[in-house]
Image (cartoon, rainbow, N blue to C red):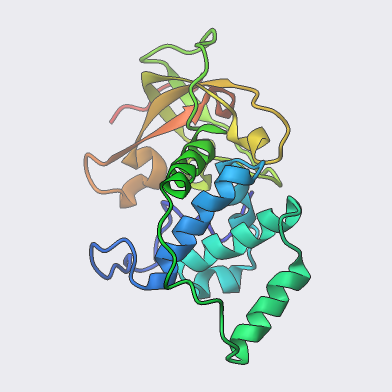
Length: 236
């Protein structure tokens, strides 16, 4: 879908702001990461559905909130959808926190090895119900060296085809394997596995004269995202 999340490759958006090399900057961020793993042990959803929920955040809120707030709101939506907690229960707990009511004291609890194993299972489930799980190779309609052109895909749902390469020409440099199609996995419409390819796009084809010399971008794309490019190549 076209949304505020799809801004890769665009100009005049300012530098990427980074703090340091730390993964978590506050305790709640690490807890949110753990919550995703816990939810993954019992949920019926895949990583692409999680991503699509984040994509649907209102643009102003998406830009004004930290990375792990995006995670937290998506987790809330998924556990409500799957019936593990109600929206009223979430709202009630949030109100209790705002009012300063004490939360359950968990300081005396010991870490159960079985819980740790469940978290590992959750991480695997989230990763492998979707893009992470390679399927038996299917017949490939493209070959290494083929010139292809990315399709224009203003789809209303989830897509892994970034907007800045729409209708741009590229060259297949490797076959990457057959994987479930994120577009349908995100909406619980089946795997519809597709061959995928590493495709190199030259900077001048993406950004014209504004591209830095000798710049290129290589990304994995599903076969259904591309057509053979029949346009004659332009001499450099």
